[in-house]
Each structure stands twice: as structure tokens, then as C-alpha cells.
Length: 485
Ligand code: SF4
Ligand code: FE
Image (tube, rainbow, N blue to C red; front, side, top):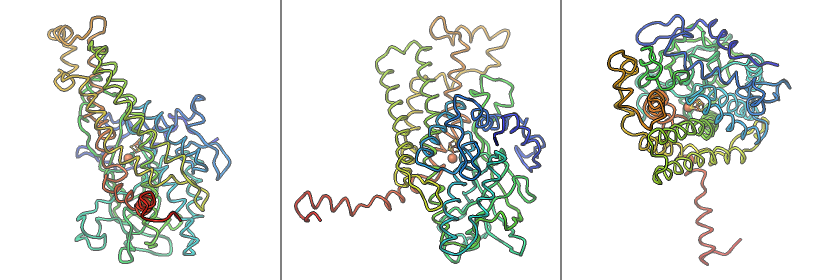
């Protein structure tokens, strides 16, 4: 069985020789860095839960490549049921970490590249699929974390990749020889990149013939020479350096994004899955995006579960739990959260088999799922802030609370209902702050907006797939204008 433990995962990260910068400094030991470690703990949960008997059905699958039990994050979906289990797995992990656990981008990249390379080979006579499957088998056998890297910096959004003033603003092939290719460029907002063993690159938009150097997909080990990681800041991240657990809100878990620079990185042909086949770049973008838009119908719902729970506990601590408007607000939050889950399940259960045998979600429903995700977490967060009260953003620090002289004033005046320790009330307020405007808000709010594509990207797909002409025809038939065919 190719399953690693959480401890194995941590040890495997220590062996990587990556170049990482954070706060203007080169980080030598990123695994134990207080700002980075919570994000590693989140990924480690994807390993730990896979070895927990209670979650085995969700967290593992039987590989179609090797017949062995593999972590579902490395699996190629072989049925609509696999797609449904993926969404359930992501909800579970959202509940367990209350943050982004990062490993989904690699799973979504593996599945998208699998389907596209198969169809590309059949149409163009290329030989990418076999190579890709060897890579996928290696990922499964070694239970690796893969960063699915799509988003380029994009420079002037009105210009195509090859028309940019700086040609590197989209990642491109700068040289080719008989051994492989050399690539230059960057990938932005890379979720979990520093916590990954492999970086798996895809193009970020549909390319035309003049952009063929930009139509490139490949995978390289994350410590390949020429790769540089510049760690992204998150709101309140330096609280993790203060040594006060309460103020962090979620001290154990967190998400991670980085800017990844490819400074003339060599990729052997064995690891190249697209090189110039611009005709298939659009399909790769669309499918990766669709899988990741499905993902949000799981992970955001799991984090939403924690936020709803926190709001309900806060109402108890504040003595407002019995008020009818508070109960109504909690019901509203649950309704919104479960609606997102419905969308995640719907696009999965309506998934279909592609020619490679790998299952793809229903594209229209996956985009509807994500478009709802650009709105509902904001409303859920607004209601949580409403229930929590303003103390969430005006509360003094844990150091004041622990202070030998003034601590007793906070103990006395920050008290809610008698019987609940003041510290518990502070902890719950900080958790809600973390989820709605602290580090976890990156994943729960702004990432809900822009992750897997900004809302306009979903609207474009929805307008293309909705078949409005068919709806118009239905109306004309019912109104007696057209005959039923
Ligand atoms: Fe996974 Fe959600 Fe994080 Fe994307 S935002 S990597 S789907 S946990
Ligand atoms: Fe994301």
C-alpha cells in the first residue's frame, strides 16, 4: 500500500532543497517556520485521515493504474461516485482544518491532464498520455503532493501572451533540444507550492497559433534548479510570530500561497505533457477550472461548517442563543452553506466518462457551483460577524489577558454569560476573526472570489453552455408560436 503517514510527509519535505523567501529573507528550514508550519499541518491531515479507518472510503481509492490503494488526492476519478466522494472528502478536511489544505490543486491537475493528453494524442498523433500516466503512477506510488500550477501573472489583460511588452509574463518555452525544454516565467497565487513535492504546470488561457510557445504543460520536482518561491503574505500572519496562541485564532492550521519563479528551468521530455499544441490548451484550462470549481463545493462547505458552529457557540457565550433573530440567522447560514454542497454534489453525480476513462464533472453545474461560492461565503461571514459582535475586532491581546496586573480587568469585563470562562469567549471570537478577516479569510473569502477563476470566468462558461436557444424554443412552443417537433 502506497500510503504515507503525516510524519513521513513532514520528513519528505525536510529532504527538499527549495529556494524560498519570506519577509525578505531566505528560509533554510521552512518546515519549522512558525508562519509556514500551520499550512504544512493542513496538508499533513490529508495523509493522517487516509490512515484513519473511519475515513478510508472517502480518503482512499483503488488505483486504475496499479490496482493498489492510493490516497484519493492522487487518484484519477473512475466513476461519478469517485467525483462525489472527492467532494465529501474535501468537506471533511475543511471541517478538520478550518483552512485551505492545498492538496486539491494537484488532484485536479492530474485529472485534467489525463483526459486532455489522451484526446490530444488521438487527434494529433502525439505521445503525451503514456508519459503522463507514468508520472501519475509515480505520484501515486510515492503518495506525493502536487502543485497544480495554472495562473500566470498575465501583465496587460487586454493583450495575448505573445503580445505582452515583457514576453515572460506568461510562462513559455525559451529553448528546446533533444533532451528536453527550458521554460521561463512565473505562476502566481500558487496554493501549497512550498509544501509540494512536484510542480505540475498548465497553460492559463486558451492559446492561438502565435502563442504556441506558451501552450506548455509539464511537471518538475519542486526543488529543481531555477525554481524560486516567494511566500505570499496573509492578513495577520505575523501574529504567528508573537507566541500567543489565542490571538492567532486557528493556531494549528492554515493555508499557503506563493509566487513561483521559473528562471530558465530545464524539463526533460519524459516530463513534458504539452509543447506547442495550442489547440488543446483551452480544453486543459476549462477542465482543470471545472474540477477546481467542483472542489469548492466541498472545501468551502467544510470551513463554513466550522464558521457556523463558531457563530452558534458565540451566541451561547453572549447569552443571545434564544433570540429568534439569531436562530433565523443561523438557519440562513446553514441554508447557504448546504446550497453550495448541493452544487458540489450535483456537478459530481452528473459527471461523465471521458475517452481516457477518467470521469469529468458536469461543466455547467461546476461553474454554477463556483459562481455561488463567489457570493455565499461572504454572506455567511457577514452573518457570523453580526452574531459575534464588535468585540471580535476591538479585543485586547492575549498578552494583556495574561498580564499580572491588568489581566484581571479583561477577565472581569470581557465576560459573557456566567459559567463560560472569559478565555473561551476570547478564543471563539479570535476563531471567527481568523475565518472572516484573518489568515483563513484568504481561503474562505477572497479565494472564494478569485480562486479557480474570477466570477466573470464562470459567467462566460455558463453563457456558453446554457443553450439559451433551446429555452427560447421551449417558450415559443408553449406560447403556441412554434410547433413541437
Ligand atoms: Fe483545496 Fe479548497 Fe484549498 Fe482549493 S481552496 S486547494 S479546493 S482546500
Ligand atoms: Fe483554490
